[in-house]
Length: 376
Image (cartoon, rainbow, N blue to C red; front, side, top):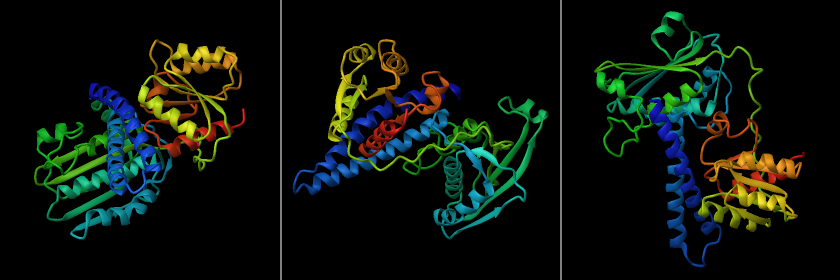
């Protein structure tokens, strides 16, 4: 599973670079449509939808690889599940009964609420598909203690207190072979076109990245139960502040931005977009070219650099050198990897400004403006 995780992380990075080119250039076409070319606009809109779906697929790959960026916060699982009730009824339909049993005094946990909601929705959809003629979905919460004896039998588990969310169905269940492969990416027993096989792997990746544990119980003809264990939140002191909401893009004021990006097409789209915003742009494909600009007597207000670059110099190396040559110079990083991946592998410091690929024109404009306007 770990090897597959590394593989999907790399695939997602490369895929995000391709998506940046697709999304970026379609974005440009849609913002500058030829006159009386409604058919072309519809075609590009459909292509954009396809690219956005591919981006969502990438996030699910990253979830399995445990490399998607998370925004952990204190979560009251009972409140989150209550808030999902209407959506669950709408998703499953009238032939399904939904029972929600919430424990009193449930411990809070620390998790990304959006990803937790997505995980529970995936489990509900899997349950629905296992009950084509209708059935019952049950969601329960518990306070749980996984003791040393349990941890000894499950090497990835740390003994301690957990918030337990259990999702059960009365569906067809799984045989032993299916059960052992259920968390593998792209493995599915559904008919072609009915699903990607990433639902359970997304749940697995999210729970593991949240330092939790997931357990699957199933028998043919007896239904399936998935139990998610998320560590009890004992203190909120370690929780990072939530990222700021990006401001609405504003017109640029003619700043000069050094763009460092080795992918030619991504660099071309970025440069074109920044020029459209009214910025002056300098281009570099690697560290040595970027340093040549930094060492020259040319105005530079900000560096916008990819994290991973050729020739041995990373984006972080460039920004570090820039800080020595030009103290106070603003910096924004971009990458096809997730924030967690680049931070955990030491490529970036925690808390730096980062714009993940693929990004839209609006996202780029808002983030550039945000970084330039920040004091310091």
